[in-house]
Amino acid sequence: MSLVGLALRAPRGRGRGRAERGTGSQRMMRVVERNVRAYRRGWIALVTGFVEPILFLVSIGIGVGELVGKVPGPGGRPIDYDQFVAPGMLAAAAMNGAIMDTTYNFFVKFKYAHTYDAMLATPLDVGDVARGEAAWSLLRGALYSAASRLAP
Image (cartoon, rainbow, N blue to C red; front, side, top):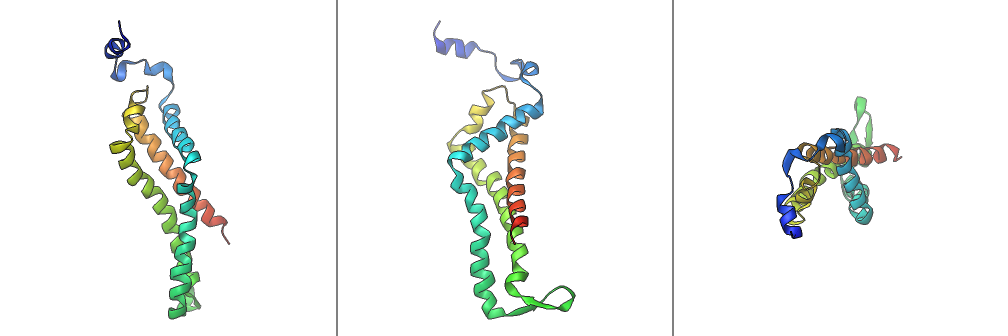
């Protein structure tokens, strides 16, 4: 029998011995591991999340800040506009990093790269893939948030 015939006769779906393949959290981590490995090659996409708030802060905080001057801060004390805007910019960068991963990257993986088709051809099920992608988005957002907390 040919390989195509064997592939067509192979069991599909949930009956592929999922029990001996590990728990749901272990399978979910395989999706996270896949994304980490993919970002080792495409690291520039991850770095842009760190550069984005700096560019926003330079353009809006400092550029517009020259026009605005000081704004009322906590307790009515005047503060510079760039100090007023910076926390929001850092929070928006963390959110954008996670949102970009769950929207645009999902679309490319689903429509063009067929990454999810390949994942579902393994012992992963739809829940494992969904939990893994959500965990990756949370991890990326947490990475940007942690970096913003470390920034002076």
